[in-house]
Length: 308
Image (cartoon, rainbow, N blue to C red; front, side):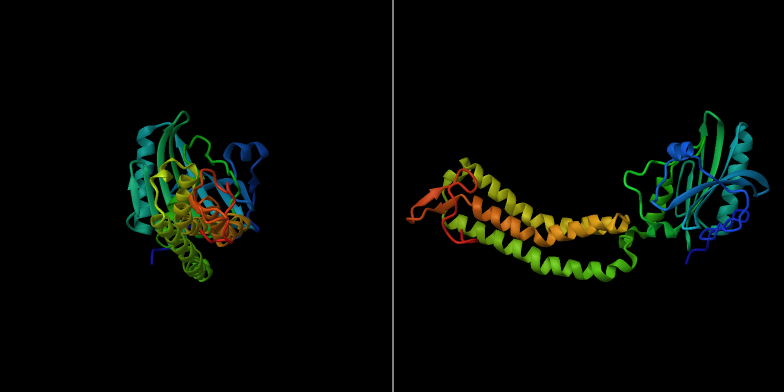
């Protein structure tokens, strides 16, 4: 198991902000500029903090009174000094957290037992920036705001999306579903056995009937193209829909969208069956004479529902 993250002054991930002095919540203008990623999020400017023998600016992100993000940063005009501080910070993180899980120019990411730590450096108009971002794993359980605006630290071209993406990387192997696997796996079984099996069987039955009644005239029938498209979509959509459900749950999207998508998947065969039934091109009229349907549902199917 990876080590836990380190505190920054008196601030520690998942710690309570109760009793912490001199926290100043972001102003409306700051929220507008920096954005807010979660519905319950409150961000604060914290007092200057002593970290690695220097005085750093500090911002913290909280939800429900618990700290989920700690962001100390420095803006230095002297590049040599900035490089020195960056190396000292990198050495400290390596000693405390071990080898980075991911690294590239100006960016180092460490997985921790309680989330992750990111060290990022860069140059801005204000000077050379060194930023350390500690993010709690608890953010995965927070409800995200729709169309959340990217957060940017003053003078730092880096966003909260970066930290969340890095954290989610550690969970991507199992979709980040946590305990939601308990209902997601049975849902997959139900969809594959009931929905997907039905659409595949009905689709192949329709193609088999088309083969038995084959006429080259179908190549000029728009209804035939529509019917074939519906058959293909009916087979492809259920597993893709399950993937979308997993993504919504992993992204902690609002539950109404997840439930709506599940309902659509379960009711999907009813819609596709009707469309295939009404658009099947090689049909018979009421007198048993073969007809080529050019437009879906015209003429109206003569057989009972589902009879091609």
